Figure 1 (cartoon, helix red, strand yellow):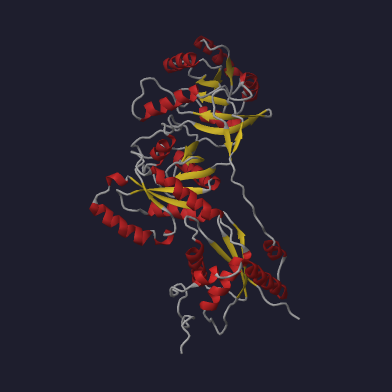
Figure 2 (cartoon, rainbow, N blue to C red):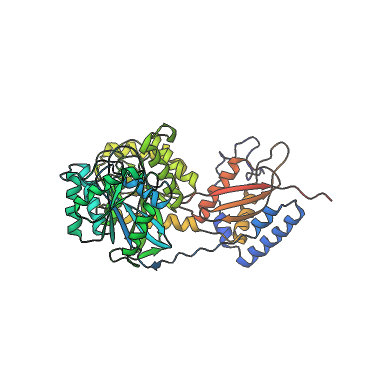
Length: 510
């Protein structure tokens, strides 16, 4: 009787689909204590092989993660406001001591109010950068101005920036009226005073009626330290307006190509107009962090600038926005990739998904504008999903409308499922029992007269689940993918990538 457990020689192990067997049933019948004893015996067997220090360290790894939410005192808030192109973002970067805010030599680059954690003289505070404020603004500029006004209302101290080379303008006068209504401590920064010869120009700003103008140069840092010392004297220890800082909420990055509805999704989840939304593609340039209570839990959402083209083809603000999108993904734990169902799945969409996979973050696919989908487009979409997204069939899918909020409640279970999978750790005993049953039923194919054998396996890390297989020979990539497939079948891992690495080790020479 032929043995049908091993694929025929020459078959691609990625192609052989193991028949539906009772692997899960057999594993359920394995006693945990027995599994640990077996794993211990296998681990002892590794002593007969050449192991280096990294191997030994790996075999001792244990991890424990807490996910409790911790409440911290609300940090005081300093908002930086002013008309467009006076150097607000450059001043933000100078205070932070790093190039964080997007800066370009043209007005209107910053559009949202963007919060950064800053520190000066041992004092921690929240620094808020805003888009340029203009009276009677229309369209997207009106939304930008509205965000600047909200930033003033939610600040403990305001830093009003004026271009000393231009002097006080009619727009600056309007900002002063708005600041007086807000009743907040205000400091007037006369920016672009690069040397002492330009200081007399700053004195002309006394006419604004906000008190002494402080000459600074955001570009060179001149005068910024002295101004910050004065601001700290007016800054409260605990914010009078900000919410308590929440330590520990899971971080969610919202990704997608421009204009698919990322900012609309964030606003709907927050229940307020948190970021600028406009039909103009590429509205968001800086990642915007927002702590939102959704589904009874606090989440930190990051709305990121849309990725339009390859980084080396981008210019100016778009180039830096793309870099910040990558940085936001690095800081996140789970990524929600937003896809516009009214348009075909594009190469850009797939590239963004690949970016998430490369980063090792958990993944949720949000199919937006579902309320605009007709029957014909639905049929095409199903075919596109089947063909183009076959490599991420494990990612939870939610069909939503960011504009109306339809089915937004389904996002939380999907996020929780993906994060639970991302955090999952399989005990060493269970994992080795899985490997033993798997390889007994479907051994690695013979290659060149040799058959590699898996000696021992361990989960080296979670977030994402990373497994290391010690083997006597190189395992075909297809066989490793087969192991991954069976891992998903048995343990789920919905929403999380799985990494399977291997270490080929030879027996010690006697």
